[in-house]
Image 1 (cartoon, rainbow, N blue to C red):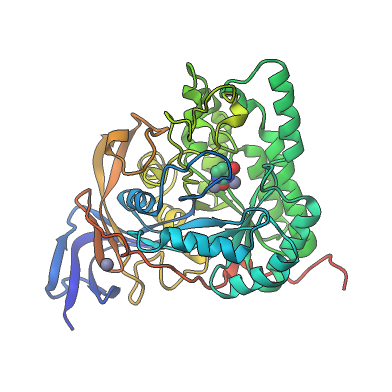
Image 2: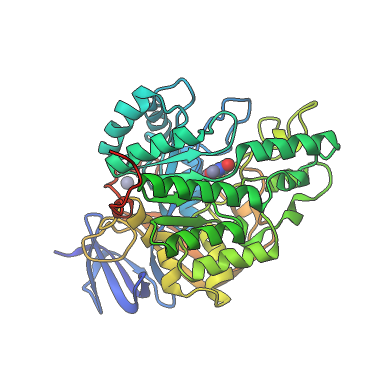
Length: 476
Ligand code: DUC
Ligand code: ZN
Ligand code: ZN
Ligand code: ZN
């Protein structure tokens, strides 16, 4: 009954408390939490450091082809390497269904991409883009049953968007199966109209990406998604919320007793539309959707994190290389913002940014940090009990942090496949130094030492958050 590993003398933080104790690990699980545990086969001195549940990033895109010539900058090796270096022990990327493809084929495809490559544990959300009879009647229910208990729908993008009726149909299946729906809420037609007007006026630089999809575009779609969720009686998660307007919609829905959840991301806390300016195509480095907005929007997102409107804080890691025709810089005539792939890298910088800007600057406390970056993700996405906390019996997924380590974010120090970071030069206080996944050391004193294949696929339980209220407007 000795331990494989003992983490000694650190300050252990969970979503509910902070305490000084040793952590004893055996067979990949946390076996004991107490003062002065007996010696383990291996020991880590965590004196002066924080011992946190490993980060869970429930919104990342890895090795996700988009159907045109763009190529995502991370595969499952570099993506999970980068995630681990940033203090994460689990990621939940997406398995995207292309139109005309069966959902099952999409899932097999992503398993093949991930198999043997991951340094940390992973699950998959589904992206439903073709809600035909096969998808809704058979594949989706079967896959939910197989542990893919959440899926995303898009209200915009030519290749992905669902119309209102399709949204209702998909929501209805989610309610019946107990799955959690994630919604990308932006109004497709409004964006198209704005984009065409901007292009006619010659406004095609990356800066105008933001102008083409201002806050009302997000607010309207958020409200519409909430309305459908109420009609069908299904809980939904509004992902990557960027504006005070959308935060208000979510808060309004919550105050009416609806189960509407929200997620925000680092880019909405520390970037603004001004970052999309820049000579040549430099602004393309910041093109993501929804776009970064203004200081008032940043404040609203911070408030949403502090007051519980948001349940989760994720990266929306969606990396493209900047200096590449397969990435942000397209060749020939296709230099207008409409051709810039949407998405920015951030899985490695998510936690340090929230720690430094949030905890160190007093906007949130350590308990909130752990809840927003780990515990709530586990609860929201069916991993509670196994992941997201430091308690006896849970997987030994741990990040040891040096809360005083101060250094700037530099591309040269990151492990992702992108060739830039939108946060270059940002001063950060507090970095993860050692990361442990199911008892295996994946990052040691800042160096990635984990092995591809150590990360395993996670079948997830139904989310307790996805339980309907029991009040539907649906007939019959
Ligand atoms: N939505 C995402 O969730 N990620 C990247 C781009 C997008 O529109
Ligand atoms: Zn999205
Ligand atoms: Zn995303
Ligand atoms: Zn291993």
